[in-house]
Image (cartoon, rainbow, N blue to C red; front, side):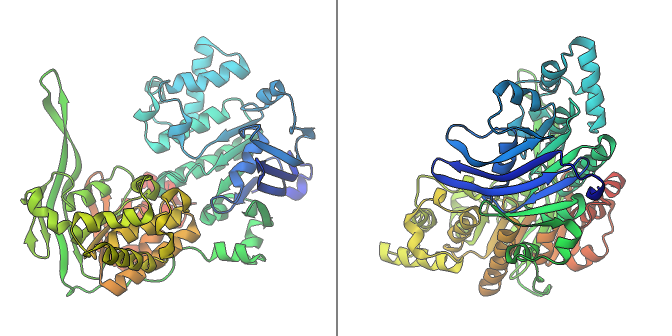
Length: 544
């Protein structure tokens, strides 16, 4: 951590910065400074103005629609607002570099990673040929990309999320920048990969003395990574200070609200005698790998390989693991939305052999809520039509007036005004859209809900609200949940029983309290270290 008292001259200084989109103000009189070797976290919920402020530094906002009514951005005393385009091109990627939230959309899908990293080296350093390739390999080794020499021709889709983010960091470091802007660089990553990326950033900062502007809504990351923090809300900085002091004594009500927003409370006690709603025995979902003109099967991807599960009325089974571990595939197999082998029982009946027409009436009793509420809701249907769709498909709730009553009841249950049923999904926030998705499932009065990462795309305060809502609905309706997630903080607040998956297999299972208190498998220990103690996660991940 940096002692800013010994470094009083700011590397970057922003004074009274304002940003407007047309006539709509997005950022109002934001001021902060960044010193060499320091990490400043810019914290706030979606729409608070964090990314807009950061993009203004490099003048990357869509002009002329976006403009600056006032303010100043100075790099070593040089004013960047209104600087000539040629000068800005010299600064971008050379003195100030940026790592974006989603590497898959930031990398060109048609170019190899060698070409994409090499482009910035050619542009700013004039490197070519063997010299450029050597520098690319040096950068990839620096960020810990395994087998870098054999990955140069890889396209972005051939790398994992963590590997793609390492490539983005390598591109950002290519020209030894003084400032690295990291805009939610770990939000889309699993907790173990997140811990590795954060450790990498800290190590690189210590090695090169970079200043880091880290944009996030995750206060857990701020606590571990940053020296100072600035809290934003509605386009303004409401509080700033040294991390330890601000966390210990937050002054602004919004800061206190953010600090208290982590999902809290305990799931209902586990009831081994509760009626079993759904179970699966020795489930397997294997995808064939084919080769040749006639599609000869040469191997299988074992997405789910011999998994047994049971979920009971009023209980929550938490299914945790990294991306690719088989969590979502298991959920889809239980719902008979993917072909699988092994026994599947619902209310004691074997349903794995049922044809679709026999299974259809049962669908209303087992519903799913997906990770991305915007992608899972039709943009062409109003909220009322979205909730009504299932009622029509199953012939429920009688005439139109009765269906409207059922829709209003479902919306009220999830905390939405029934009068909003004539609006469309894009008119709602992320948390409100997830409530709509839950209302759509509740309208059919199900007995089982499979919740596939329902909070991962949401801000922490909204996560806490959704967790409280799910707990209330479960208690009211005795719902059985299968809660799929890689966020163990959320799982701990909801799940009675835990299933830990890796590479399609169950590596540990048991009562949630027991697993959290005393994990037995190294992989479970790594997940817990990553979720609950980011500083020690790197070592735990390596051990697993």
